[in-house]
Image 1 (cartoon, helix red, strand yellow):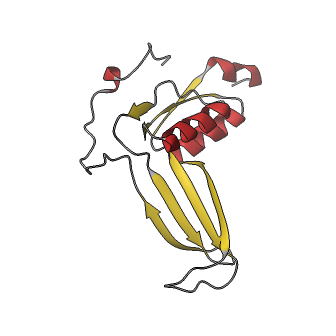
Image 2: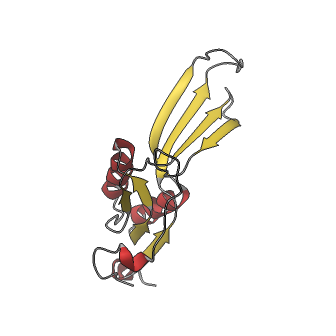
Image 3: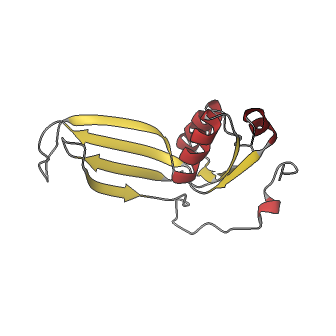
Length: 142
């Protein structure tokens, strides 16, 4: 592929988009009490991260994912779009919360604990999935 042909191609990335919350302890972790540390939040999710990196390399990345209709979902899609990813086909699920990934790192940066959620309704009912064509807002480029 020649360097200028990347703008003619589309890369479709399907999968998770979530809010990442990473906490790193400033000293040894003490359980059952508060620990001083640094917290960082950012848009995340495996598929979203891949799409963002492809866009930063100059590819036309299209993300298909789902987020809730909450401020976190707005943030995730906003940061992803700002990075150059086409998020037009991402779903905003009414009445659902955006998935999140919470990681706790020790003072050396080693992963100690992880919690993950996925978009769920407040009543914890699973999401009902339908064919992609149900949700596409325009004719897909593929």
